[in-house]
Amino acid sequence: MPQRPRRSISPLGSPLLGHTDESPRRRRIRVQVLLTVFLLGANAIGAVIVGALISVVVPGPNVVTPREYWWVNFILIPTYLLVAFLIGVGWGTKRTVQGLRWAIEDRPPTPKEQRRTLAMPWRLTRLQIGLWIVGLVLVTTADGIIDPNSIPKVAFTIAFGGATVCAFSYLLTEFALRPAAARALEYGDPRRIRIAGVMGRSILTWLLGTGVPVAGLMVIAIASFIRQDTSSTQFAVAILALGGITLVFGFALSLLGGLATTAPIDNVRSAMAEVERGDLDVRVEVYDGTELGELQSGFNRMAEGLSERDRIRDLFGRHVGMEVAEAALAKNPELGGEERDVAVFFIDLVGSTELAASQPPKQVVDLLNRFFAVVVEEVDRHRGFVNKFEGDAALAVFGAPGALDDHCGAALRSARAIMDRLDREVPDCTAAIGIASGRAVAGNIGAKERFEYTVIGDPVNEAARLSELAKSADGRLVASARTVEHATSIDGDEWSFGDSVTLRGRAEETRLAMPRRQGGSTASREASAR
Image (cartoon, rainbow, N blue to C red; front, side, top):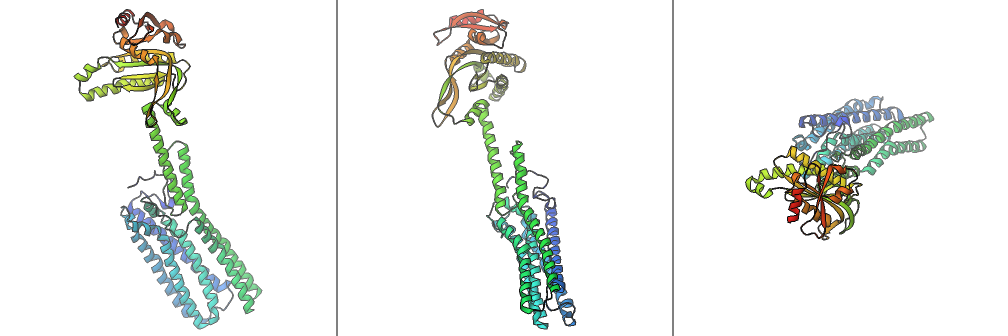
């Protein structure tokens, strides 16, 4: 089942509609009550409109007070209204709820059930249209039998009232069925099954809120020209009444159509504000089958893409370092590098071979994770980055890819902080650190299809050799004197300088430096022996 959007105050655009994660029983009651109230109210208003138009507004024969119309007004019309109510409101809402059984049972819909759910507002509206057409035929025929001249008046007023009722019925049932539509759209987006898109809603609002009343005025005007029996008072009353209906019901239809259009947009706008505040897990309910539903779905796809990109970015940063990741995202990475002044240190566990042979693999991994956690935290705190892990060793770089004012001092402070913390927090391991600095090439090494950011040069080799030397030195921390001399943010008196030695694989001598608490003789003798 698709992941549900996070619960918000009005995820469906109105507090009346509740939430899609409410209980099935409450959902069924809510839908049935809303449909009953909306359909009953719309038809009651339509009946009042028809009665007012026939009795007062529309010129023509009187079909209300004459005695010959008593059986139409007091038997036929009330009986049909009762039958229409039972069919349209009672049977119609019951059939709708039965069609939404999958949502009430809280199970995934079949494709047929999904299409039926999204088309349900139009199905209910067609039922209302059918009932009003039957009523129009029955009442017009009955009145026409009594007086054929009443047919145009009765047919127009019933058609006008029916059109208004059906317009309201469609918009209100679409509103009431939003929770079911949202559940259906969770399982796919059948493109615009509903009859009215955004443009269709606008045209429907104009047609029934403005077009039909204005057309009625035109029909009355034409009839008055033809019959020549309409007084100026009757004509003025008709104009005022239909004008008032146009203002009131035109506004109401425009309001409903506008709310149906703006509600999805408001949901997306609120969700976009959450994204701007950094919440990439926000999602909106998709409950509209028009272009606005595609907008809601598009926002969710966009948010999912942003969330996935953020996870990839975070994962990428964990693998290569956040600074390298930011640089790679800022510009298209290419093979090659640039010369940079950097400081590096190489840290390695002492006796790792014996450790792996004497302890279970799980304990070894746990020890390495605790060891590397200290290393990464201190390197990050001093604005360096761990370039790579090599089994039980790690290479940290300061001054690349981003420039660092005192890269030598940062490397020295970071190394000393690591040694202090390892003594306190990971006493069951012993590590040695070698620190060097100088000119190196920093950049992407590998092939076009697969490369990594790294630092290559003499300082890296020198740091590795100093790390080997530090394993047999007191305090197990050895730096090159050049690194200490170039550090501007540390007190040089904290370090003591030892002999100059030739490290394995290097032609130039390296003068050694160690924290003041260490002695340099042991390290010097070991270096000379190498």
